[in-house]
Image (cartoon, rainbow, N blue to C red; front, side, top):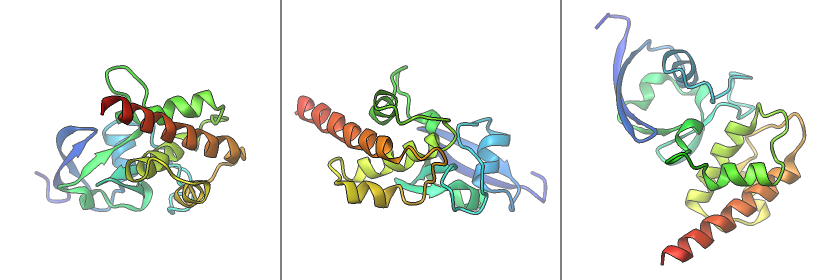
Length: 165
């Protein structure tokens, strides 16, 4: 291992990974440039817009302000990890069905923030949804459809859970 690289071990979308990273690279840089996971978008690079949101240890985080070495030993989920057995996640389905996808640039981050919320609370009120998405900016101003999509996804998740019981 080179002296300017740090070896990190983590779970990425359910798969164990060991990679070497530069100590000053952000998680967003590593995801996009080193792991070729380009669903995580880079925009402000200051943690203000939410385009780079991923789920780290069950919490939504802006990956542009997380240093890559900080994820050592963590569980990480990206937008690419939501598809299971070729099926879209209920959150992804709801965004499509409700027309919440406009230009699409902010959508991966929005979906990841919504996913983190719905993992914690699958029956959120509108205020809960607004709070969970407060760190995600949509320049196309599709917020009403996005809120509707999150509400719909929560309903789908509750119905799926009830069917399993």
